[in-house]
Image (cartoon, rainbow over all chains, first blue to last red; front, top):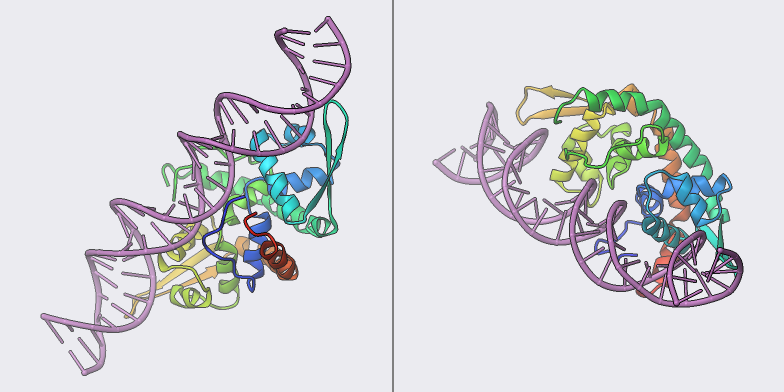
Length: 119
Length: 119
DNA sequence: GTCCATAGGGATTAATTTATCACTAAGGGA
DNA sequence: TCCCTTAGTGATAAATTAATCCCTATGGAC
């Protein structure tokens, strides 16, 4: 996972939340799982840009933090399915709110970034 | 600011939002400004752990992204005040929701991290 | 002149997160 | 046997974010 060198301030909800969900892909991953993409392969195909390795890592962390659960089937090819835990489900309203905000802000951000040559 | 090498996917609201707000301190900073801490010095004192340099950088980025505005007064010592823009204000509901979630999850996270020796 | 406080920035390094590439394992099919 | 799929991991490099340290500027107080 990575051994933190700087401790977490448990009294700041914002920091705690960031610890669990503040990475490039986790919101997307949880979103896809909630939409029914339960197998790693499917999630991988659903999210453009993510790599297999990173997906694997993030799934592991999400499981470690108790956001998702995992079921393995002794089939061939191997089948594994992930599902949201109750805690994970409690994130869904947040995720959709963030997504909505981001979509509304996207054109504005695009303008800002494009009209600024080298920042 | 930093010249991105990997482009942003403007069609994913989650990624767009993360670009603007997904850093260790930005939520905290916006939160403090909304609570009335308008001067950098005050924000610095209000947030435990942040350094002056990083606060300066984050304020700059938030301003660049249009989340906050800035007013300088020709006084001595120098006085500068930041305020939320309309776009910035539209983030407040999100921030309080994330904060609330984080606070509820904090004890659970603490348990997880403490009962796992070296992950 | 020296020190205070405030705000801002440059240069550099440390910390952290993502990406690349190359493995392993299991069993089916050509 | 060789290749296919799926899932998972180790080692390492690259990208990105945050932290450290030091410098500038302003004008008042001592």
